[in-house]
Image (cartoon, rainbow, N blue to C red):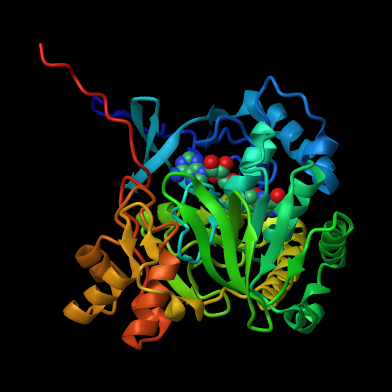
Length: 467
Ligand SMILES: Cc1cc2nc3c(=O)[nH]c(=O)nc-3n(C[C@H](O)[C@H](O)[C@H](O)COP(=O)(O)OP(=O)(O)OC[C@H]3O[C@@H](n4cnc5c(N)ncnc54)[C@H](O)[C@@H]3O)c2cc1C
């Protein structure tokens, strides 16, 4: 690639860059347009909609009800809103922001790169699956829940002919139910959380009765489809071979009995983790969130980060789901407008804040009902791969800790290469920190968090031929 084209913001028009065209980014852009601003909206996806309202390819014709079920009306509203904005925004699809520095975002689209100046930056970058390793998870046929759902939503494909869903969280049941409804064979749902936790979390979950009811209907639909559902399990291994991939999953049931289920694919995940590398590159401060055991960028109730002119919204700031993403996207745009001296509707801001408080309570309920299984890290056997990009095993990570005395993730990364590969620790970072904490005998927050490095994702490199 050649040098980046540098676009400076003109003095008269404040340039607002919105990253992400999911529900948070769409509502954010809509609010800015209503206020007379022409924002730049950048998204690495080919089409707008983000994760939950991911659009199918242009030549696919599945109806909204088939694709989005009970969320069809919301999906249609987000898509129509975005389409109506196209004349009023500068939309950059299939464009990755790979770095942020000195009030510029660095973008790459194909092999063209640009540096865009901004006066305000609103990060609506969403989330990805949160994963805990299990022996054998490197075998072909192992997917994250999100990956399995993308195959279904985008391409109408199942990831296997007999799929086991393993992990915990609302997405576990949702994706399994979507597979069953699409006619795929769901071999079982293996939930690491015990059923009683759901009951204990009810008071918080009742903050969103409709969402709770939808969750119950999903579980009922699995029973109707005769899918076996196990609660309180412990994963033992994904079995199979390097040549033929996944052949079975073994686990201990809640009574301690080891069981093995034949399958040719596994979809696994433990709720979500915010995509917050860009917030890190923008130098936002982070704090440790004890209930979710994750580091989150600091933001006030309206989405103002610790850095002037940088705002955070949607799941990339804190995981509140799609309704929370819409509300926080609008609120962050209103906060940016207010900070620029524009008049904003303060009663609208109050109502959005109230909505987010309720959603936060519901999210706490989900964390209580479907906890991240931190304790599993200590039980991982040494030959389990922890970092799939670099093929580093748990035993190698433990040996690094013991030889170097390191108890901090970035230092441990330098010694072990865990988190240094293509995914930059997105998929192994949480688990690696848990292993460091449990083996090193330190609190998880002391193990720290992997610092984001540019480029946040691999970039294309155009090579010149020797003449
Ligand atoms: C795989 C997956 C599947 C999900 N499925 C469901 C579901 O079926 N039902 C449900 O209720 N919830 C689901 N969720 C949760 C739901 O997606 C979110 O609550 C909601 O979409 C959050 O909206 P958002 O706008 O914050 O982020 P998203 O909808 O995730 O949108 C973020 C956007 O930012 C873009 N982006 C991120 N980083 C960059 C970058 N560096 N450069 C350029 N663009 C970037 C992404 O391409 C993406 O389009 C899912 C989450 C995931 C991760």
